Amino acid sequence: MLNRLAKVCLVAALAVSLGLHWAFLQTVAWAGMAVRFSREVPIREAIAMTFDGKHPCTICDLVLEAHKAEQKKQVEKLGPSLDGLSATLQVILFPPEFQSQYPIPLRALQARSLSPPVPPPRAA
Image (cartoon, rainbow, N blue to C red; front, side, top):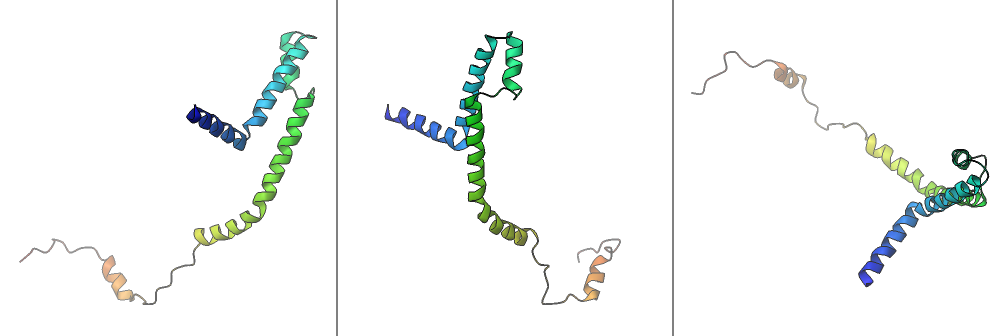
């Protein structure tokens, strides 16, 4: 019983952290709107009125305002930390060019660019 309660609490916490509570409330609002509109007009028009955005209910307005406020709060919370992250990413993505302390002589590079001898040398 306790294990099941812990799982339910974990799923609920995950759902709230992902913002699924807003989706649930919006779904309830849409269902209520479809039922209310279908009393006045045919079901096809009621569903169209539900999803056209021109006839929002009080729950729709509440969900929209709360969702916008939550997103604004998240942006404010993440704002300063993103500046430091971009500076770190710039250093990682574009490191300074490697400068060797020991210059490679040009003759060594030319010797390596020559093709191997034909026929290949045989072991003695």
